[in-house]
Structures are given as C-alpha cells and as structure tokens.
Image 1 (tube, helix red, strand yellow):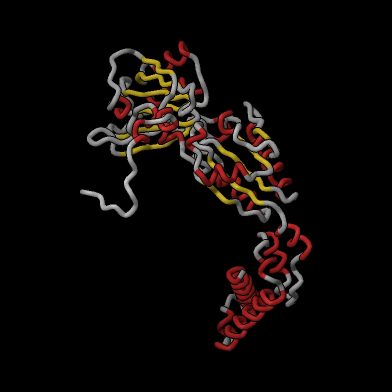
Image 2 (cartoon, rainbow, N blue to C red; image 1 turned 180 degrees about the vertical axis):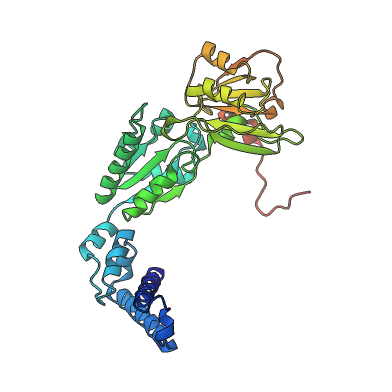
Length: 372
C-alpha cells in the first residue's frame, strides 16, 4: 500500500511538471517553480498519516483479508482522505470463509503422499482432483467430503480448468476447506502458479504442498539413475505438450544429459521425429524408456531406443499416465541388446509394509552409546 501511494504521488508530480512544460514553451517546470524540502516532507507526512488512519480505523483481522481489488478501492479514498474505502461486511465474510490447499499427490502410490498432503485430504470438505490422480489415492478421501474430478478431454481442457476454479471459489465462499489435488507436484507442469494467482486475486491465498514428481521418481522406480558419474551430470524436464496442444521446441542433444519428457506419449511419433530434424542431432540408438503408471501396481516399463520406441508403443499399446526418459543413464543398471523389453508390475514398497526379520532384533536401550 505504501509503495502504491508513493507511485500515485510521484505520477501526480510528473503530470504537473508536464503541464507546466507545455505552458512555458517546453521550459522545465523547475525553472519557474521553487520546490522546498518541506514540500516533499509534507507529502511524505500526509502519506504516513493516511496509512496510520487506515491501520487505526481497520483492525488487522480485516486488513489481512484485503485483495488487490480492495487496494484499488482504498487508494481511491486517498485523494479525499476518506478511510471508508473498504466494505466491512465483505471482509468479514471473506475472513470467515474457507481455506484452499494446492497439494501434490505424488506419482501414484498412496504411500508416497507427504504427511502434509495426507492431513489436508483427511480434513477436506471439498476435493478438486486431477483426472489422473489414481484410485488408490482417491480412496483415502473421507466419505463426508464432496469430490469433483476434472472433466478434461481433448478440446475441453481450458473449460474444465475454469470449471474447477469456479467450484473451488464457490466452496471457499461457503466456508469449506478446499483441497486442489494435483498429480505429481503442483508446480511441475501442473498449472499450480496459475491457480495460486487466481485464488489469491479473490482473497484466498492458497497453502501449497509439494508432491513427489514423477519426472524424478519414475526413473528411480524403473532402475534408471537420473544422474550418474561419467554418464549423466544434468537432468532436463520437458513437456511434450505445449499451450493449446502445440508441440514444443525439443532440446538439443547433449551426451551427458538425461531428458524426461512429461505428457508426451499421446503424440510420441511427432516428438521423436522432431529430435531428428532441425539440427537437434539426437542419435537414433540413444537409450530410452517409457514409464507408465509409475509406482502403481500396474506399472509398466518399456526399455528401448529412440529408433524403436514408437514401434514398441504401437505394438504394446499405451497405459497412461506415462513419460519418456531419454539418455545413456537408461542403461546404467539395465543393459540389454533387444529392440525393446517390457516389464510389468511394481513391488518397490511391498517389503516396507510386510513383516521383516529386522523387526525381531532387540532394540538398543535409550542413551546407550553406539560403537563407531
């Protein structure tokens, strides 16, 4: 608010200077106008008094609920020294409204939810979920909570997104705890920042909870180290689908880079073709892997090369959601010579949930020193 007031005063001073220049035949206003330090100090004092009035007139419980639109209303009252630029009823209604959480649900397995996201789901009155959030995660939602799934299909993605935002805003105005449950991480190709901006603009600044992104966890579940000494020293996360469904410009080939393409399998052929043209210089024998339904019981990994990956998907079919990992890191642990290999199933967390012989070992008493 202080910054905006200063800008308003500064703009007014510039306007007066320009008017004076026009009247004096392009002479600067300062040539005929004597400005004292007291003038600037008086303007500063007026700003401080007005801000003090606002803070004394309005309790902090109401001020914390103001939006950008409210700031504009308050600034309009600055010229008249009026402190009634806010609607107390609207502020109180907003303050007693709900809470919005943007939460990442991780790659798919419910065991990979953060504790914070799990708590948010358990206390939610309204869940707004991505279409790709797995059933195992949605099964955790309490029965009392209202659930809306994004109705996204080709040609309706933007409208479906608007619909989710409208549902969320309605829930917040009704005083509900709203959880926007997003696949992976909200800020990794999840439009999380757009949603944060939308709700903040309406006076509901979201709490944002990170999620384990499939861009880094899916390769791990497929025994692919995203980085490995002497093989890959950098990781690049790309999207295979740009705005309005356009194909983004693919990256240049770098021998020591692992590239992860999200949201790319539905137009895999076009993506692969783009890697071989326009001087991108991707070798056709570059190892790659298609990882689908990462961390879910029906996880599938197709290990191949850029030369055969499209043929492999055509013959084996698709199991969305999935991603493409490309780079020499794909053959650090797994080494094969076939055109492609298909691996089904995921058991990576089973042993953690099963009884172990380790649980039968004696527990070290508290405060007992540990031999090193």
